[in-house]
Amino acid sequence: MTDSSKTGASPFSFKPYQEKEGEEYMNADQLEHFETILKNWKGELMHEVDRTVHHMQDDASNFPDPNDRASQESEFSLELRTRDRERRLIKKIDESLKEIESGDYGFCESCGIEIGIRRLEARPTASLCIDCKTLDEIREKQMG
Image 1: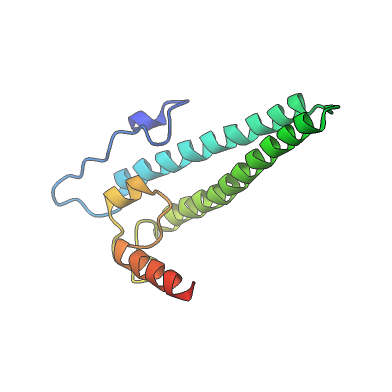
Image 2 (image 1 turned 90 degrees about the vertical axis):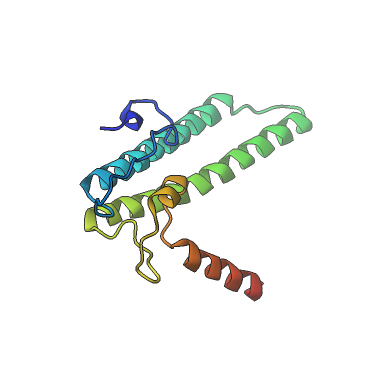
């Protein structure tokens, strides 16, 4: 197991994978490295979800002052939007974990080439190589 497998470790405080000369891309060690990163990241996000639920339950007050009530509603709204983004991220993490199981992880879903160890360490849920992602962003920009 890698250093990132310690309980409570940040998903991005891992030791970068050291590639060995001549090793096959997405071998068992690499897959284990990324599985650990993804599981730690998901665990941290799930912890934040639980924290938000408890925070909202504990702090849900019916303030008589409209300004206080509006401030609390605004805070809760921001927190819920953040959790919604994290919920979608958890879904992407789950998809990446399924790709690890199926043997498709680390390969571009568009052109099939290797995404690369460093890109995956920077963005473990990446499903496109840098070239396909760049083209995707250009198309997105042109479509408005």
